[in-house]
Amino acid sequence: MHKVSIHPQWTIKQADGQMLSPKLLALLVQVHEHGSLSAACRQTSASYRHAWELVRSGEAMFGAPLLNMERGKGSKLTALGETLVWADRRIAARLNPALASLSSELEVEIGRVVTSSPAPLRVHASHGFAVEKLLDALVLQHVPVECKYMGSLEAVASLHDGGCDLAGFHVPIGDFEGRILEDYARWFDPRTCRVICTVVRRQGLIVAAGNPRKIYDVRDLSRPNVRFINRQRGSGTRLLLECLLAQAGIDSGAIHGFEHGEYTHAAVAAYVASGMADVGLGVETPARQFKLDFIPIASERYFLLCHEDALDQPQLKTLLDILRSQDFRDSVNRLPGYSFADSGAIQTLSQAFPGRKFSQKPKTSNR
Image: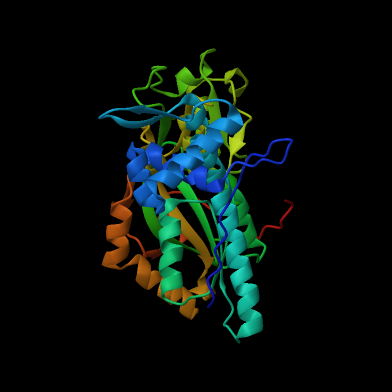
């Protein structure tokens, strides 16, 4: 199968047509990451002289410095340089999952024309870092995959309507399990649905390094000086937040930024890291990647939902082998806030959620 890659690229253009070089943006990102222009040159394979030409060109365009150089201390981005770097990271965090979905669609379309490829494994899932690793492993095993990232509710509804073979969704462990399952249950058929255990992960508050706003739990979100960044409607993380707010007796209308939703955990973390928000709710991995602080709030299980008859498909058997492998276990355990837990185990809804009752009555979609 041919692998399609799509990467976001952006620039800034002046009225006279002068345009900021994408190479400069890449260079500034590496300066931010490694702390010196020389290290950034090594990472981008640019000569030191060419790097300085790019920097001076950008500074001339803006009429403001991008770098501060201190002897013996490397390079430090100015406020303008930092703004450009975090704009780049927000763009990538927001667009990469959507572009990954489009890439998989194009791969399938090309495969149908070029070869008599088998039908792809259609995965609709809430975005997550373990899911990314699982999909990468399937590609290495030459399993054609058509993946679309979406909210958990939309994913399980899509499985119900025949839109996919696997739906990725997550459920908090503990007090809120029953409440969250009420939202999913309308799409569950306990006679045919099976859940595949994948991982356990932590959700929590993502705040700036050092937690300057002194934000420690959801009650702090309603303070007038706190800016919040939410997830989109229908996401499992937003459902969890609504449960937390109800438990604390907080009206969402009192939270500045509650209605502004991002589509990935990475986009939430990038929003906080760029200074556009003080706090967001998400998983731990992107918080650590962006050198932010993380305050654990809840643990949750991430599942893949399918119909029982799909388990006989060769692609599903390969997926189960991957989930049960030591390589996958090790890769998951290296993700901050993630842990391998019964990955690859197949359960009925009653086994996965003991004590919960699910209607045997078939549902019809009214999305």
